[in-house]
Length: 164
Image (tube, rainbow, N blue to C red; front, side, top):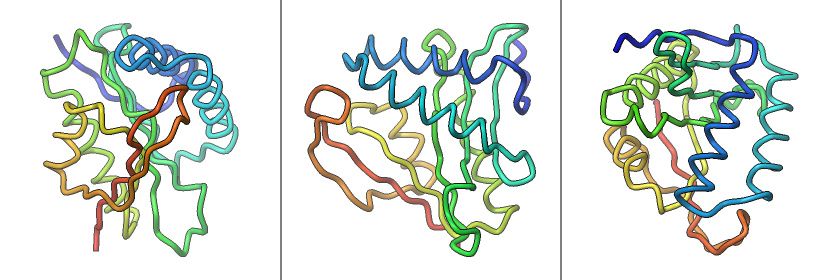
């Protein structure tokens, strides 16, 4: 397998949305509320996407999209130097091969290169493989609470990586 990492290509957002939905519906039981929220958020991001400001990184094995990660730097005042890590997913058949670590490492390097002081993300505690990657990179829990955002009660967590 030879994985090629590249920026936005037409259709990649839709394919990543499908991967997100298939992964989280199957593994966590998320349904329509998840699909609606993530789809709307991805569409809003794509509408304001600026490759000079934001990172939209995909991983392809040939023509097959096998993963992706986004750093949304357009949500906040640029003076805050803050990046929102979003939509980090690796195809379940490709996990354990270093794709997730490479995507996360490149996202962190992008934020450092842009002078960001912080990267944050929202997740749930039921994703141990992703959490191991975040912990290894230095992310810490900044906030957590129980909520039913995705149709069932979960422990939602805000993880933060201080880049200063």
